[in-house]
Amino acid sequence: MSQIRPQPGILEIAPYQGGQSHLDGVAEVVKLSSNENPFGPSDKAKEAFARTAHQLHRYPPTDHAKLRQAIGDVHGVDPGRVICGVGSDEIITFLCQAYAGPGDEVIHTEHWFSMYRISTLAAGATPVEVPERERVVDVDAILDACNERTRLVFIANPANPTGTMVGGNEVARLADGLPPQAILVLDGAYAEFVEGYDGGAALVEARDNVVMTRTFSKIYGLGGLRIGWGYGPAEIIDVLNRVRGPFNLSQTQLETAEAAVRDVDYTERCRADNARLRAWLAEALAEAGVPSDTSTANFILARFASPAEAEACDEWLKSQGIIVRRVNGYKLPHCLRITVGDEASCRRVAHAVRAFKGQA
Image 1 (cartoon, rainbow, N blue to C red):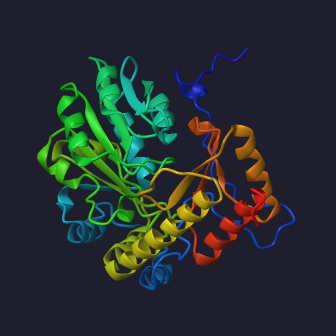
Image 2 (cartoon, rainbow, N blue to C red):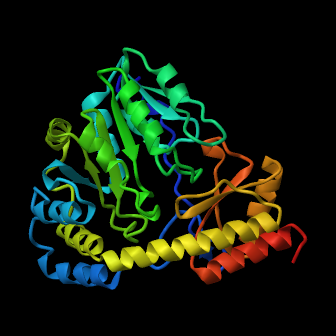
């Protein structure tokens, strides 16, 4: 019998399940399962993408200097403390790889983004789940779970899949209350959907134990290219760059992301359209008897009376050519996460839910 075995923790990882993208026999599917920008990337980003076709035989730069500078210019952060990765997922992996291992603990909340647990287990560390309070991060519960083994604490703000946020004062209290060896990681994948929110950048500037992660997959419409970034204390970013592969991002990723982040007008239009359609969809669902918490992201977590009703509604929506996201794996079996699409998609899903409820 073979004695080849993976590292401890690897076989505890359940492979990540992405949102469903097609339905057999349905040609025109409305996909509202992956929180994608329904308007896609900006024209400037698409033009930059096309131009890189002439450079595919060249290795990309290893320092990501132009993209880091663009991020610094737009978000008002120090480019020297920015690290870029293959989605914010890779930054999360770097953090676990560099700062957690066997005997260490990594805290995440009850309705967590699954990559926190996956990256923790892959590093050989122990994931520790703490409860939320009505689908909102509970700072006291996190602090109660901390001990001398705690190395990382992950919170998503806005949170996925709930769409809720915890206020800046509470986040600062959390950072101040962590044990001295622990890092607070603020996952800001949906931060750009919140008007005036810096994703935690000011807290990073004021503390030496906070790291912020962001992505180009959501508001920038570049999910298909997998680009993300992180911002943190210089010492931590230096460590992460030591485990980062030198060519982890291609020239295509770098130039497309740079154009996307600099097209501020397009980002602002996407934010405004999302806010308008999100409010309309939430109200339409509530009128149909399907409540949700106030969302600060580009999706709504629709709550049903029971897991059976949520499952039945999901099946009904599929029969109408609409794909949303079941969130059983996030311990929300009575909910469906519905991406805010364009206006036609929002109206279509609202009509279908009303029909399911017998109101159409």
